[in-house]
Image (cartoon, rainbow over the protein chains, first blue to last red):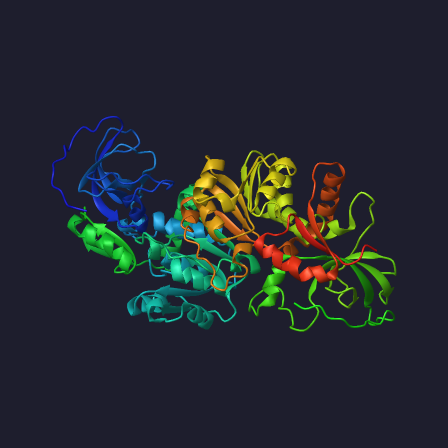
Length: 319
Length: 319
């Protein structure tokens, strides 16, 4: 990634396009997948030398589109730059400003990661009250909401994360019943047996690799694994083999990959419910905010070593 | 395994037990799992020096149970021996003799493997007419029925097997659209791309290992993998790692392990439908019949090198 300087004309976008000022940009692990030439992915690779594309919260400066006017706040795909011309406007969402909800939350709690947690938990995990739920990368953009939704649903929830600070956050601020630092565990199978002596009903998998293999050994009969991400394998060209899949048979486990984009019909319900939970104080949400576009490359790279605590966002401009 | 000689009293079983004469015994790969001490399996390990237990077709000689009488033909768990005392009678099934259906078929087509195919295909694979179906170990006890049910359902069906003879059987007798010998393929991914240029909707996995890894690369979006068995890994203490699970996410694949025993409420429907299909000539079924109890150990071991062609059965006695 490199930072380039160039000019943009601040007037007259054409063909229903918008000229926007980018306020907040989202650093999301899925973007790593767009940095390789991968046949079969759900989203095309980035084009080298072109501006990176990602989710952002932006303010409309000039609009040639009847659905948007100058001053509107929007979320959706934009460029990693100060100003962008947005031509694909059909998936943009208009933000209703709300004094009680930070604008940047439309990239996390109320954006793609939050909706991933919501769709994955309710639509893929088939949860029941009283079930035992394990979440990996539990303090991350998705995991922290999965755990809180599971608690509100009446589940027992344990999360794993990669630092003492994150474990404290999970236990003391995010309401997880238990949490552990996977980097301090020599034997992940033993760790899971310690926290789930009766086994795991639902594993919400954000990491893949060794943790998935250990979870497979600790699932209960008719358990469910929502495969949301494999961040531990993202930057590895030779991915780790998963060896315990025969558990799927013995324990009749359903393992399901998913993308939030398959559930967009539920987005309005999600937005209403999760906004209400937040405003009622029933859930909280942690962001890791970096200031300035120039901080974006390091913040993005930091995702893959767990440098961020909570949802990683870049503030390009406060207004 | 060793063959032992001893006597059994041919009268007066007590406590609702049956004395039966075993006619046919079933060699099933799942029995391999009972030959190790595996915590978490769905069925307890065999006890060394005790008679092996397995599915059989037997004739009642003496009954202390009001539900069975001398002369009844039954299928269910019995011993790998000439005569057995059966005390657990609640899961035995009485066979209605039918001149058009061989008795031994109650261990294959109409027994556990056939019902596995039926429950797995209809209840786990969520098939639609016109979909592309891949079956591994396709000429085996389960696979041959999966492929035929899929054809009757209007699917395009390709099977893999481990010999030229089996491939011919699949194409010429079992009605598969295509079949290939996986042992002749240097690159399983390339083989699947050749047979499924548009991708696979449903993979009915009987083998695990390299074939599963290759299938993951060739699934279509929203594909389903029914995980029925992993015979390629059964005798390996250090199972092969599966490296392509990230496909589950990109392609939103559902991968589900299952056991037929979870679907027993469907057994009567299965028995009626599949018996009718067979008698109408809409499906066929191939057995590999060995004669004599002394042939059982080698026949069982042969399952794991693909020596059997079709469902492996041992004939202990013709009457």
